[in-house]
Image (cartoon, rainbow, N blue to C red; front, top):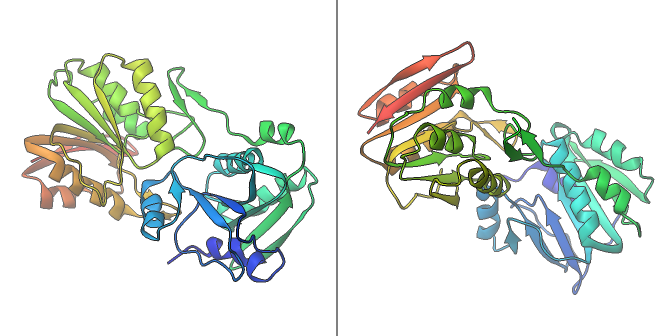
Length: 338
């Protein structure tokens, strides 16, 4: 079922408050998700942008014109579906300003959990012509693109962060402004003499892969699997900067529904347990099961988890052997052997 915010986004067109763009016009849809129904008279072509692999694949399934990164310019309309990251929402507005023509209409929608009210107030300070409309437990607001967007783009566009002086990351990525404490604990327990083929499942911006390369420089190669296209590109940069001699391959992948083609001697991971807005421990369980399928016989998975997450049960059901390496007040490092 589609998010309410998706219905909120199209509501101004449904009610005729904003004229739907017609045939021959071009619409840029940032943060697009599947499940929308076009209002009557909405005949414009839509270029959808979605960097998260599961949401991208859902758009593909409905035969949307979708890409993981934005392209093109001089769009007549921009639609922005907000997510939970403030910096990412603001960056999408900056991107819309850069990619639309003068006088284009930019429509933004989100729910309370997306911080839509504070975002609307922030954008209102630019004093652009526009309005807003609450509906479906959310708010849609819109404005007309001004001639000069230089100042607004500079203020709204996200700035890459240097983490620990070594890694590049950006708002919207997991732990974009610091090294995650759980990943750090797992990194401290990585093998020092590993020399097989390894993978990092849910690699994020590449911290664990870099740390494995440092701990075991004899590793034959590391494959990085990540569902967030932007994070995967950051991981590519970070591996090149911090582990340039380590053979690495990068896969934009939904590990809950796509099977890696290779088998590994070691898989490391800090499995995600949030999908979109909701906490979903089953996501971590699915990725642990995917790791079991992707391991060679005798291969090992090492993972870190919040102490409250009961991954031991799936390890016991799936792996020949399993155990706990260590724990602290917040996290535990677990392992399983196929």
